[in-house]
Amino acid sequence: MTKGTSSPAEAAAAGGSQFANLTADERTAAHALIDAAIAERVADLRFGTTTLSSGQITVSVDGSGHLVEIAPDGTSRRL
Image (cartoon, rainbow, N blue to C red; front, side, top):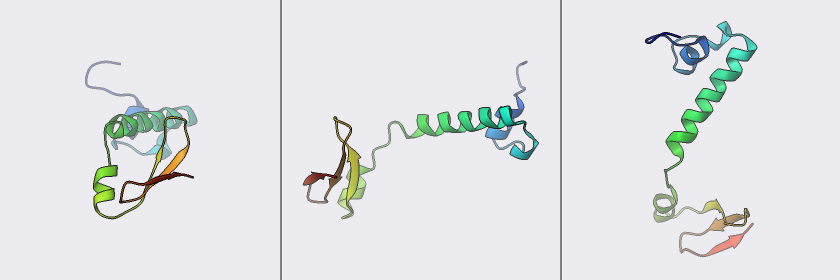
C-alpha cells in the first residue's frame, strides 16, 4: 500500500465506501478496524460521575469481575 491510499476495508471503515462492495474477509477486517477505533476512543471515558450526579443508577464491573449497581448516593450492591 502506498502513502495516501487505503485498503477497501480501511475505506469502508472510514465511511468512504460501502460494506456491500467488500468481500467477507474485507468486511471482517473493516468491522475489526471500527471496533478498535471505538475501543480506543472510549477507553478513557468515565460516565459514572456525570450519570450519578444526574440521579441515575449506574452499573459497573468490580475488581473481581462482578456487576455492581451504584446508586446516586454512592451505595452499591453486587448484582
